Image (cartoon, rainbow, N blue to C red):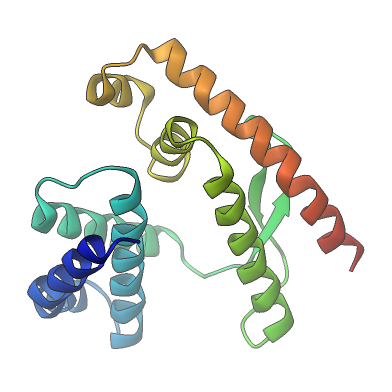
Length: 181
């Protein structure tokens, strides 16, 4: 990350941190949940800064916070993720029946899976990575991405397809090792 991006992120956190935390606290039941949501918002900001510029940072931060609050409400209990390399995108994450709370090994495995995923994502060409992140992680429809980038929808779908193939191949080896242990 460049020093300029790092300083922009730091300045954004200083500017919006207290107000955003207050906003989130009003919407959730406890401070721990509010801090978790705020941490998710900051993480999302750092991830997005790498892929595209954010024009109205304040509005964007509050929108992400609102989405995280809604997600938390929809999700009654937190469940660990089970990873499977199938499906349309090449991998899916499904709710597992085991609870990772208090299980440091499962928590560690989940963290390692995400680290491997992001390492594999960084190996992609920027155009493929951007389309994959926008469509799969940020849930932006292809039509909106096409309007934003000026690229045809079919070209975006093709880029995502190649990204999925790479991620599937790259994560298959890791997934097999994880399952064997």
